[in-house]
Amino acid sequence: MNYTEAKQYLARHGQEHLLHFYDTLTPPQQESLLAQIAGLGLERPQFRDRNALTQKRGEFSPLGALTIEEIRKNEAKYREIGLRAIREAKVGAVLLAGGQGSRLGFEHPKGMFNMGRTRELYIFQCLIENLKRVTDEAQAYVPLLIMTSKQNNEETQAFFREHGYFGYSADNIDFFTQETEPAVDEDGKILMTAPDQIALLPNGNGGWFSSMQRAGLLEKVHSIGIEWLNVFAVDNVLQQIADPVFLGATIDSGCASGGKVVSKATPDERVGVLCLEDGKPSIVEYFEMTDEMRTLRNPDGSLAYRFGVILNYLFRVDALTHTLNSDFPLYVAHKKIAHINADGVLVKPDKPNGYKFETLVLDMVHMQDSCLAFEVDRSREFAPVKNATGVDSVETAQALLEQNGVTL
Image (tube, rainbow, N blue to C red; front, side, top):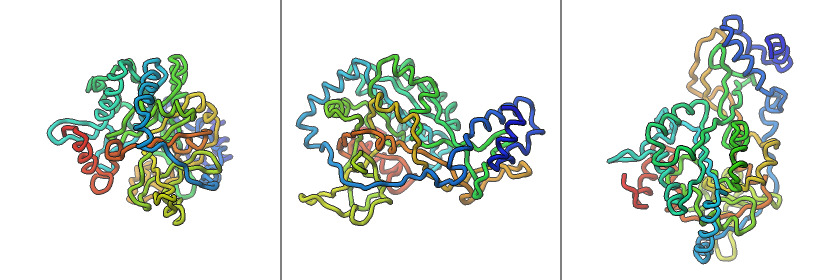
């Protein structure tokens, strides 16, 4: 795209201001800005109406789970199926690590946060050590694909190199960068962070598979023969990765996907619940649930909508392919977004001033024909690090690590 084409393109969509500083830029900066403009996709509905692709929900109904008690009865069988799949190189893992530790008061990739008290114990280290227990048992590596963001990619890769990949095989780790979406102000005008830089922010964890494809890693997945991808979040330090029992149970069930769940502590716990929506697997967020849904109980007294997700999913690769061309629901987040004003001065707002667009991995579940809800013990597998203090904080996660025998 040249300057004239960019100017015409932007004029059609009311975004001509993106070329305001063009004449002040160096030729390489001009080329970079034109490339950014060419990739904006301004024809998409969210730039006419930011709520245009907001998800319209269907009819919800409860979904049962393979409970902890039922899993124990067949644990040996499931474990053997899962270990066999790992040994046959049919399993890969995807770590969603694009976020920063800002809510922890830590201005670096969240995975670099040190959970230790008497020794260094980083979040990344916790996850790799959890994975290594499985690969040591299987005597085979699981290819690990780590999704970073444009903001933290270099620092994340340098951190892994500096720490020798925490003892994992560097040959079995690949990094790829999360795709971005432009951020807009209150009037729908795209923001800029520098005269040659559009405000492009990570597009949410729902874009992990398309980002993998864009990075060329889907070709690697196919060449290895990987049939299952285990996708998990960076901020749960007890996250069990490539869990052979979970793998085996999902494979044995014949389902196209699986999701680890925990029983809700209370009806009002703020966690998304795995359920059915119009007869297909889905996740209903806590704020979408009616009072009737929150309090509905089974004949045995248990909550009907009780299986909360912990962002640990299994997807069959062949069942993911059709999601690449799907219109994901967009979630619009009102955020504080640093930007330059018309004079080129950087503005750091103290309150939300614009919107970013995100897709979520939970919507990939609804794109599958079936999903096995696999219940786990929250005290052994769910220690999220979302806040500096209070609920789901550094302190609560540290206590759970120690409870599980980890020295801090």
